[in-house]
Length: 151
Image 1 (cartoon, one colour):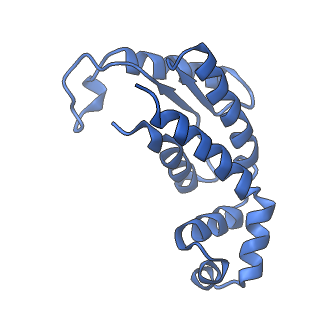
Image 2 (spheres, one colour):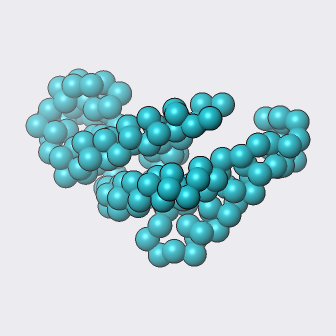
Image 3 (spheres, rainbow, N blue to C red):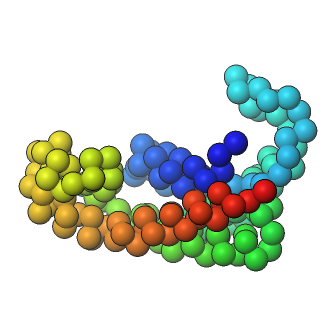
């Protein structure tokens, strides 16, 4: 497992499904059944129970889209606070902001991102600034580091 990839997976999923908002529950625990990638619905264990509880918590809150559970009380609180802030920003992204941020992060320059979108480098930059891309990326990097260090 590579838990540090959770922020990347969440962002890609939300980008693909935009403008539909999704809620996510991320649980840490063991899996007590065999791994069945072809039919994960048959898998069970504390990891799934924590994820389900986290998702139910997220669904019960108005402006909460991502909840972590099972990482320890302090870690859960820190991860949930970071994602509360990240989600507050990305839930406001427009289609063009999603496109500009995604292109910039793939290509790493505003010029090449702009060419891929048929807009100017300046327009890509403006969309990224309006989306608060740097703040979102900083939060995601912090979560990645935190998740890399779990045992």
